Length: 216
Ligand code: SIN
Ligand code: FE2
Image (cartoon, rainbow, N blue to C red):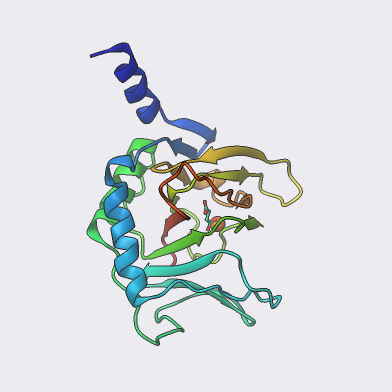
């Protein structure tokens, strides 16, 4: 094995600790990235990407869809999980087995004991310029289960804050294939995404992010 190969291997497998119970696994999903993107295409053929409206009446710059028993929705009445897609009135597409398997392996690699399967997978699509302001994921019933976030396509600058909105935040680039998990004492950390930049050298026109959650 060459020194370069060795360096690549260790970079991909070395977990980066962002908190007591928050871990970034660089490149963890890289070998499955094409299949995950094909899954997203199949899912969003049935449950199309759409720009949801916030309770404040603003259209989100991020386009979203979901798969699993529950999907995350937002409208003038608030944020919630729903068992049917409000756009089609149909149940959300099933979560692909490979996604459940990836979540399980990532939780183990990051040292989480939790073995419950996600029942809600939110899919975000960021065109250049799209962003997600600082927020907590708190529409789920059980905060004991970690969030498993998979980044694909264009890179983005991720904001990683504290438990209060005003807490200082650090920034890090999330790239194609990176998997980030946060649970336990870090489960209610504020987080967000800076406006995604165009990258002519990248073969993808969007950033995609999958967050696998236990909502019910
Ligand atoms: C989210 O917070 O729902 C998504 C985060 C991301 O796109 O990385
Ligand atoms: Fe979030």
